[in-house]
Image 1 (cartoon, one colour):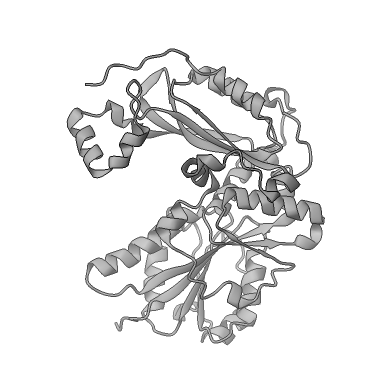
Image 2: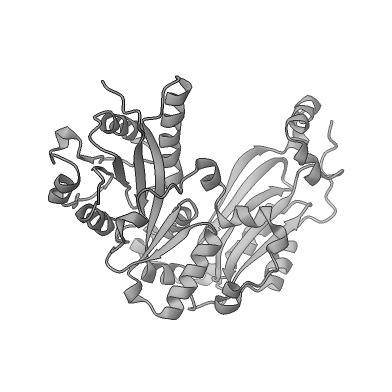
Length: 398
């Protein structure tokens, strides 16, 4: 099999169901410019890519030739990742295409897909051969009207008591984590296509754009109606860099630039989108922190960061909230709880660790980044502080 020594570029298109991914792809295929495009579709439902458009932009349209490859009965961010890698390799090695577009299922998380493709390229390089595929751009297609609803932009911004909310309908319960999924798709992308802007007001559009910027400060935002986006805005962008993209989320940026927390940019002044960092060395009480989130304000769009608990003083956790969904996942042990040998090796390899080291707590810290509209920072501080176990001293380090 002949290897294509010019990497075949990959554009990954993500976005929730109904956002307009397929419409955008059909528009791009209708005017591909000089590109020869193959398409991989991961859709649980009906594949509605126009085969005639693929014929125009690539070659034949039969599934056997690989011009339109449906990957169904699973999701390419998890159980179909090996199938995705194989199809990418097969398509790239035909030398028929210079671009492969992946339309991900609406429920796909983008990071695992990017990891699969990046590891493919790295594995080839490790064998002393050029990569056959490389990601050029990750595009998140968003329904502007839906974002207004999901992020409560300008609407219903009073604190919500989730304990006393009426029982949701079954369909709504199934989509309880929708805000979390949309947030992940926005945080890990290079380009946001803000679609259906004709369905929102100028004020709503501006607020949504400000929210997107807060979630992903480096993302390029393209406004669109009916998926009309020039191919030059999508292809040959050179925007994707895995290491930069994995650190592109607004909450990570806020942790690395805490001095900007209190800055009032024009965006904040106009739309009230703010970032607040809560940081304390002492641990949380687990039950008290859970109670805080039972009364979490509805105008908080995103909260994420590192926490530790009095009940588990050796363990680090990642807390993540988007919409109504709150998760707390283990993230290993704190370096302060490792052996002296491991600590010494870590300090030798990463000298900057000493900058954030505390004589009592080591690297243990509660550090949460909160993004929202018109935040009541006093409420956030008082309630989170009220869940802190003040004066707690962790076990003495070896």
